[in-house]
Length: 640
Image (cartoon, rainbow, N blue to C red):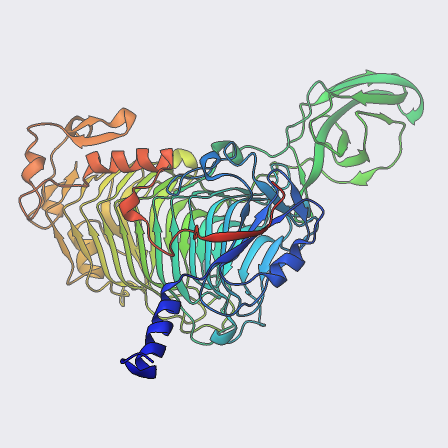
């Protein structure tokens, strides 16, 4: 026996065993095989590889497993044939991925209560039937998830392509009601609907610890939303959220009608029928399902008229792509008051009664709200993102919305607090940032500690239907800091404050507006019940600090000292026409901030950030979250 004794020897053996990494197994799953059975039997450290290019249809569930080692579910592709670990996937680079689809209105992939440590990589998730429901459900937003012990946790979605239908959209692409979740390097698109909310990523029953980085995120309602529905877990506030290096956007074409108006409409006399002699006029409207049980319609066509000596009128038109039916409105010129529904591209009016109704005054469009919204969240960091393409539709046009909402009256603890928004570009939006202090009529907690620093906001324009304002701040948030931003907008107000009454305004305590470079336009810093400038600040922000700014075009007599008001605005920058808001060399504004530095954002850095975000390759030093998939795997089943 060793002189070290049995105890020491046992310790040495244990240490040797501990030092050997646990080797997982690889299971290759081919089309037609039982994926759910493989998920059920997987062990921590395993890697499940789905046949490249194959489609797996079903409503799959990630079960609960022991331990803290990730199980990986991915396409069976060599690493040299897929995007790298810091490169965003695209529809083109995902062409060979295995595909997972629901085939019905339920989620294609969901989690069991308490499931944890699953990694999803290099997969495509396809739309649900008619865009109904959620494609991926991480956690449960219903009353079933009413305790923290039931919350799924520790999930990684890395280089996945999740998309709704171009024709029908998708209610929600990723439902996020879990904790310790990382979504990175992914492409989420066509999350849209008509007449209801839609999100690329949305959650309301998520404890937090969420990282969303280096993704292309596209949705109509809110691209990313936390809060909205009251959480089922008492006192839950989603917290510790990081959103960075993402492109939050939507196509400008979504502003157009979903369905084109019929063209080539003609009316001609026809034999038979009981119409008396006279002139008859018709307009045609195309219709089709647009997802989630909704039928959309086009604008009415141009009017087609014909004079007959009696009998019938045949109306014809060109087929509209995707249309499943048409409504033909007639008969009075300029005032059609009845219609008939047909499935073809012609209709003969023989004098029947029809259905009472007039042509629609507008066409069905995708329901657009904002790009990023917090309704119940705390400790949120939003940085290095590109926010673009937002317009007035179902909301008034603000790109970023920070508004606590006790939506159904069951969440008086709901709050938006400790939010840092920095180093972002916001462009092409009907308005900028909306900050609300308290919800109403249902009670919420007070919005507080909002820091908006070093951002470039430009192209905030009334042409997109909004008011073109940069900041809306009301109903008494506190400690709102707007510092070192560059802002270009065409609305009347730079900051508009409101809340309370003229005799008892609701104060915005701790307000700071410092070192910003911006236009003034008509009213600059304005408010309800009073004039703009110092009067507005005295009414709502008696302890406010407004210093070190360049508010181009303002009257110095209207504002506190310590600010500049030089004009013109455009000549201070390299080229506003192409979005280059770097201060020109030699400008006095380069030393006008409170610390002797330049006013406004670090635009040179922000332009590079925007380029990086568009390219979709994230700086390696920025990567956070769980480590990449392990490589020490032993293959127990392979179809290669």
